[in-house]
Image 1 (spheres, helix red, strand yellow):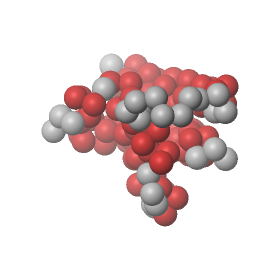
Image 2 (image 1 turned 180 degrees about the vertical axis):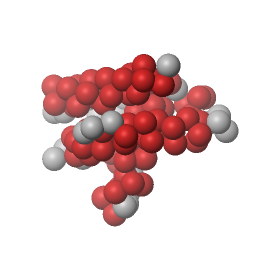
Image 3 (image 1 turned 120 degrees about the vertical axis):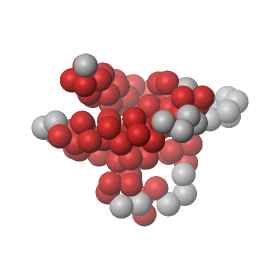
Image 4 (image 1 turned 90 degrees about the vertical axis):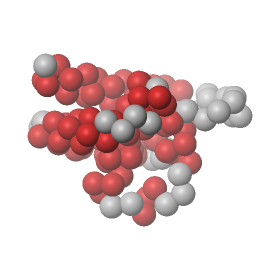
Length: 108
């Protein structure tokens, strides 16, 4: 079950990279409440975060976007986030995939 969950997170990261590459310039501005990923992108000081904090913020944003705010606000979400980060980090290329997603979100 953990492998399937990790594969799902990696698929989410890859899908997010593909979407960002496709529609980075075509997003409409000011369309209601910002999505968690949009808030992450706009977060002041994101680049000043340490490497691990930045990765955590990226995965947090992706999971929140996928699962919804209610799940992300649940007290148990922090433990799930820790597990996902650990599992992705243990996979070959996992950290690099998160870093690429972060760079794409920043428009680099």
